[in-house]
Image 1 (cartoon, helix red, strand yellow):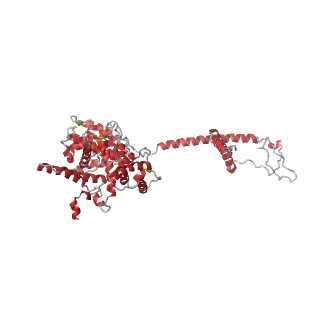
Image 2 (image 1 turned 45 degrees about the horizontal axis):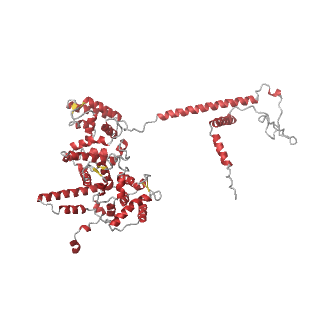
Image 3 (image 1 turned 135 degrees about the vertical axis):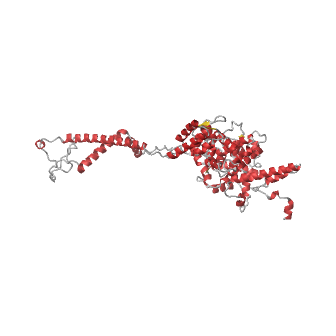
Amino acid sequence: MSTPSRPEFDASKKADELFFDWFTRPTTQELLIDHLSILLADDDEAKGGDKAPATPPLAPPSPTMPSPPQSPTSPRDSPPPGIASSPRSPRSVVGDVSPRFTRKKSVEARKMNARRARRSAAAATEASKGKAINLPRFYYRNGRPKDDEEKAAEIEREIERVFRRFGGRISREDFPSVVKACGLPLYWKAPLFVACGGGDRQPVTSEMFEKTWKRLTTTCHDDASQFIWILTRGRQSYVVPEDFEFLIQDIIDTHPGLTILADTPEFQARYVETVIARIFFSVNRSWSGRIGTVELKRSTFLTVLSLLETEPDINQVMEYFSYEHFYVIYCKFWELDTDHDLFIDKTDLARYNDHALPPVLIQRLFSEAVQRDLKKNDGKMSYKDFVWFLLADEDKQHPTSIEYWFRLMDLDGDGVLSMYEMEHFYKQQVKRMERRGIETLSVEDCLCQILDMVQPRVSNQIRLRDIKRTQVATLFFNTFVNLEKYLEYEQRDPFATKENEGDSELNAWERFCQRTYDQLIAEEQMAEEYLEDGFDDGLDEELAALKSNDEDSPDLEALLPDEFDDAS
């Protein structure tokens, strides 16, 4: 039986470790610096320093007389090998200082100079650190302060004139005059009125406004920080959903395009919820539930809010505030919420879009992957969560939509869609297509096509950045999570795609709302006509045919009667 061989000992590696340990010790560093300073001083002395008196040249050694051996006790005083030493008489060096004493004194002086040099270097380093603190400031969280004192003085004079015109006290109805004098957007008026201490029966005095305006302008110097300060009254550097409620309610009360909501308080509450959900869906890219100055600056919200002042048709402001978009969202929710308690469960959601969602996805939707208040809502989906779901389902190219569906498909939450996770979702789609008698791709072929389409940087692992980098997010997610939309794509007419999309300036969400709103209005008009005629026979059948006769329906020919086939 052979004995196991002993591991080889690497002496050079061990020596390197010991040397590194010795070299990095503070005492070693100080010693090396001292010796380096001495060597540099010797070099300077040899090049241009004070030279010692020259001694007469020594005669070359006799070839027959060898050089005397060096004394082991005094190597410094012995001559180099091969040179004969010339004995010096004590009388020849009378009055000279001992060479050993002179060298010792020189070494001590050099050490002192080295210590002085180290102290000077340390002082220079500290001085440089002090200068770094005085660098010009380049980052301002609340915007760079403005030096236009003349403009600020003009604004203050205009504000004073407005308050004098109203007798020093301004109510909420007259407050837009103050907002325009300040140069702020019109619909900042209600939050600013409340920030100044105003209320339903409490007008704002000139002193109250002057105090608030001074605090606002001295701490916030750009639109984003000022908007957040006004909504939160300076209490925090971010806004939460509740901070928008008073602002949007004021838009409902005063915008000419929303007079239709004047007599319907229950619809007003839903409109407020819808707008807030859409704001956070588009602006709150961090999914934190809080919007700070950075996210607000990167978004279009403040620009869109300013457009409300000049656009009387609220439906032309398609981002956030469109009434038609709100109507579509609420009608979709109302169809699923059978008990009308403003919550839907798994059974309700299963009926969405003609049972388009696979069961495994419905289970994930009612997890905490994309819903924050699931436990508080007794395991049901709230109206706000449904708004996010519908936005994500109809426009899967939106950055938040991509993150939404990626979170749902990432079962283990490791930030990677593995082959197992994609196979897990696609098998559900295959089963449902087989029940309908639809020919399907095998799992292997489907995953190969997906990988060729996405081209992930890491083989067989799809990350969020891989999907965002490409323009195939819609097809990618529909393949796994929405059977109806997947079949629509597979059965599409490639030559009529652009015609069906209509205006290329509209995104997928806006086209969906436009199409669905027209359909809902047509259904209502048809219902009114039947009621006016006094009968409702066949109403349900015609409404069902109208619903299915959508331009994005996967099989329009199946809706035609048999006689059309015979005629053709």
